[in-house]
Length: 245
Image (cartoon, rainbow, N blue to C red; front, side, top):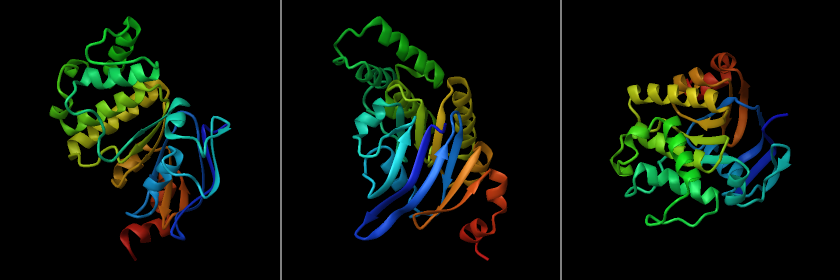
């Protein structure tokens, strides 16, 4: 059974379909890429899956249960985590405090910088920081991190919520080629080691082709092609959209 299924999902803004009759399915432990030009509807699609928008039509099913209409918090509680194009964290807190806050919220514990957290939450925070390669920077203030480490911190926060299905919106946005390569290797590693499932958007086509097991191409709110990277690369419609005649 697919982990995530979308059936005819549609979102209208003023009568215009930002997402139009989109259907797709994501298998367990898959890295699934969604590409398309600016304005194709990729971020709107992620907002629908994560509960920030509600579908006007269609169904969204996660682990066999319908989730469309649930609040973002309820969707997070089911195991779906989200990162954004612009990294989101508490800039003036340390790396440790950022991840620890997510862990404690998941455990529904009250939290403050002056409270004594439980041994279990400390251990979980330490494990996550090790997984995202930030244990050596745990006392650094978050805003001082380089771009690649900021993305790792954001993923650490997402993992702290207990997520096992990750929605990544342009995970290498603003990164240099070296940082992009490092981040791709990092995402591939944690997906394998932690048995994660990832649905992501990205504008760097070579990166998408190299990391994805399956790709969907959006254009004007609709999916116009879907398949393995090799099939998408050879698709004439996709070539025309990106490169013209």
